[in-house]
Image 1 (cartoon, rainbow, N blue to C red):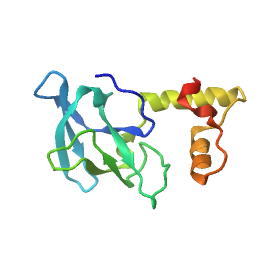
Image 2 (image 1 turned 90 degrees about the vertical axis):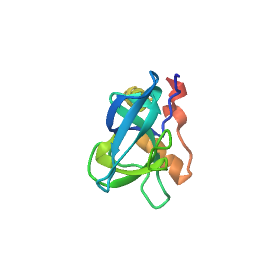
Image 3 (image 1 turned 60 degrees about the vertical axis):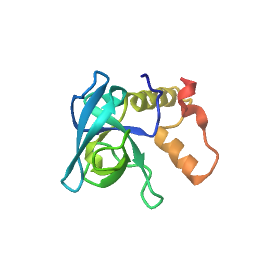
Image 4 (image 1 turned 90 degrees about the horizontal axis):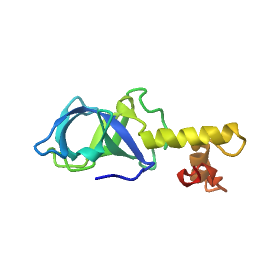
Length: 143
């Protein structure tokens, strides 16, 4: 099953092994409280030995932070319900990585900036969050 690029997705470091069926993987995630949780996911959610998850950013948390750095707690939404009975799990920012799609989007934005035709993705998000006029030249569709 091929999946479309989703800019809210990040990669979560985990242990990945074969699942019960040829199109699934078993994933074990280390939670920020020291426990582990596991479940089965379709293999389309696995990228570079990590599982694709969505960040859950409540209004009181900053929308941007450094992926792969630090031990700040963050909640992610799993692609399927795991054995602990929820799709939500707490992890740390140090366990998160950019997806290939997000990396490609940032590279396109950097190219546009170097050509004098765009703004950074972080600036785009800041403009959007402030509710001001947003330069949409960073959108993936502009590639």
